[in-house]
Length: 252
Image (cartoon, rainbow, N blue to C red; front, side, top):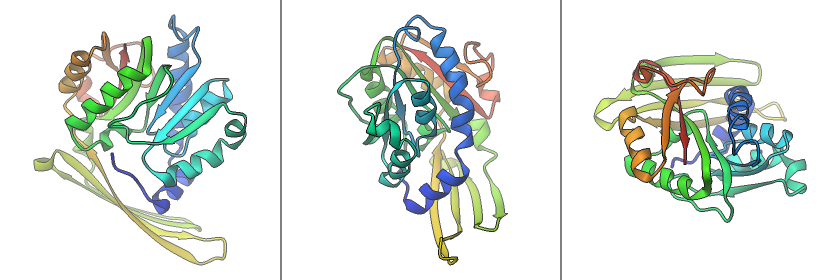
C-alpha cells in the first residue's frame, strides 16, 4: 500500500479529516443495530491515517486498533488519541493493509476515505480481504468505501487553494491503461517561525471494478456483501456503478 510522508500527513491532519468524522457515527449506528454490535466493542481502523475515525469510536468506549503503513500518519494519530493511548484503550500499528495479522479478533473492521483504492492491484486487495477475514470474529462486519470507476473518471483537472497558512495545489489525471487515477499534491505550509515549507506528494487510486470486488469477497468466504451509500448503509444500491463513491458492507 502507498505510504505518505510528513508533509502530506500534516496537511491531511489539518484539512482532510472531515470525511472520517462524518461517516463514523453512521457506521456505529449500523453496527450497533446488529447482533454482534450489541455485544462486541472491538474495532480495527484499517489504513487509519491520522486517527479521526478511531478517535470517534474511542470516545464511544470502543477498544481500537489503528493500522497504517505511514509512520508520519501514525505520529499524528498517536498525538490525537494520546489520552486513550495512555489508558491502553488503543494501539496503533505500522503495517501494510495488503497483508497484516492481529493478535486479537474484532467485531468490526472499518476503512474510510477510499483508503483501499490506494492498494496497487487486485492481488493486494485480495491480501487485504484475506487478512481482514482472519481478524474478524464470526458474524463480524467489514465496512469500507471505494471510489468507483465512474467516480475516478472525474479526477482530471487542477485546483489551487490559497489561505494564510497554506497554499495547496492539486493536479489530477486518469491513466486508463494503468487502471489508475493520479493526483499530484504540492504547495507550501507556514511554519511556527513564519517561514514556509514546501511539500509534494503523488497519490493514486487504483480503479477496481465493483463486480470483481464483490466476487473476490465471496470467494474468500464472506457470506454477505452489498453496496450502499453512507446515508443508508443497510440498504443495497440497485446500480452502484453509477455512483462516484460507494460503501461496501460485508459480513463474515
